[in-house]
Amino acid sequence: MTVTIGRRELLVALGGAAVGWPLAARAQQPTMPVIGFLSTAPPRLYEHRLRPFREGLKEAGYVEGQSVEIDYRWAEAHNQLPALAAELIQRRVAVIVAAGGTPSAVAAKAVTTTIPIVFGVAVDPVEVGLVASLNRPGGNVTGVTNLNVEVGPKRLEVLHELLPSVSDIAVLVNPASPAIAESFVRGMQAAARTLGLKLHVLHASTERDFGTAFATLVRLRAGALVISPEILYNARIEQLAALTVRHAVPAIYQYRQFVAAGGLLSYGSDEREYYRQVGVYVGRILKGEKPGDLPVQQATKVELIINLKTAKALGLTVPTALLVRADEVIE
Image (cartoon, rainbow, N blue to C red; front, top):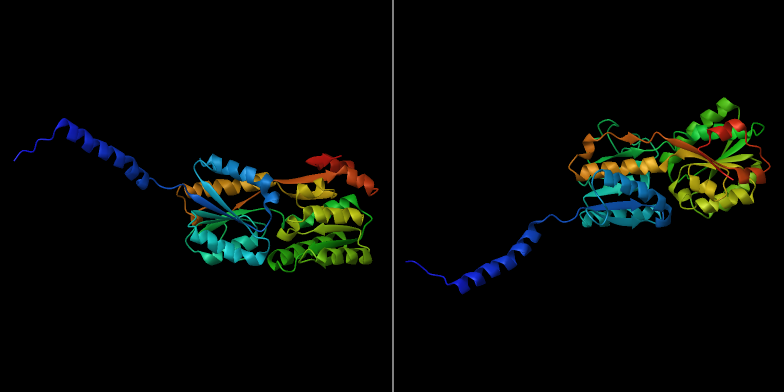
């Protein structure tokens, strides 16, 4: 039997189908991937770091808000990291960026063995159990290491070059972060012996400890201070710089912000290169590469920043050789 459909009925049928097609097409389209960004520093400290991170993502073809979404989770303390990491797992993010150093990376790895994790750490990731090896990480974790622990002895050398008559130097570390503190102190002690210096180890695991640490530094008559890489200290760079100015102590840290806030010196990895590499790796994983197949990268560029105004206030004359090597001089 032949069924005849009139022109009006045909248009109605086609119209109904046309309404359904876009809905079906949208239902089949993949949703925008979500990156989970896990850190223990406040957002204001990441403004200058997020720019190169986004540039790295863009190199791989991803733009925040257009082709990828970023879910930021900021922990005020290390003990908040496990819960925040679990929230990102529930969100079913495509990749987790452990941007808060070793604590963030450890917390992320503890909650998933399947979601890719890209870390940014200052320690040996093999030594702390994040990856099996640098060349073949295996599993779901890879990332980028900076030189901020490794170049600790170089910071001591820079201070010694600036202050050749100073024999007692202090180093500030956080005992609550043993992976960084112990490795940093070992390198510093070896360098101190080579340079003929006496090294005093000061502890500060909370903001409340800063006053005690600086009081101890004054009592010991240490002539200079090296501040170790530490998330807690990163979040309070301006406060630490102010304390070094108040106590008139020449000090060196890893980041430019310390010098911009009035600290004397900084020597450490170029954050722009470091975070750009993290962004590139996240983009490559979003494109389908496996984290276990991506070798751990190491940021290779370091920069020396000198605050000449602070040096003059401390009555110091910066050697010409040191000024020439500086990547930036703040006057």
